[in-house]
Image (cartoon, rainbow, N blue to C red):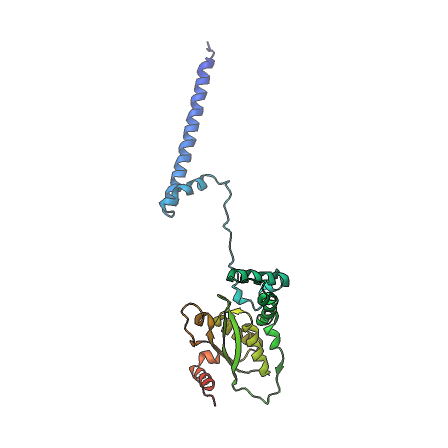
Length: 276
């Protein structure tokens, strides 16, 4: 005769089977994870090992994408800074800043001798730093091609300039010498002097100014070679700091034929130094 199974016994057996299934799944999961961990341990340093496991065991977690930062161009790479066109203070604000500096220096901007000084300084700054308003590229656009096939060196030397050091806003001044080998024509000689003035009438370093002069000539005229030499005395060195007057600083830039051929450099320096 068939006996009816005990319901309590069946329930117990089912529970045991479920427990055994759970244990098997957990064991399998543990082995897989342990295998992945051992593989990653060979590639990931111990300090980062624990953090890496969480990412492996959760495939649904979003993977963070690091932000890519692009370094901005230095201000010297721009021939006309953006600040000239936007965010420029008014004339009244500039004069108020001068009055503040006069008070900071220890004087009274309201006394008779200084009453008009803020307006004079603002006007003078408009001329001293007028290079920000000028386009050096446009100065070299007019090229004279009818030069009877002339392709030898063109040298303009002893171009006087006055500039201001960007570190202390103190003047530095001197002479610039420019030479180039024309390819398609020559530019008006006065234009080279105007290029020097354009970059000099900005807050500058002598090194940057020398490179900027060479850059604009190279990009517009595309000559076979360019040589630029700037020699200057810096009043920030003569009037403050070490206070050494009469010290001359020389910077050069050689491009094209002048850079590849040392003999061309010697020729340039000889022509600059052999003065009548």
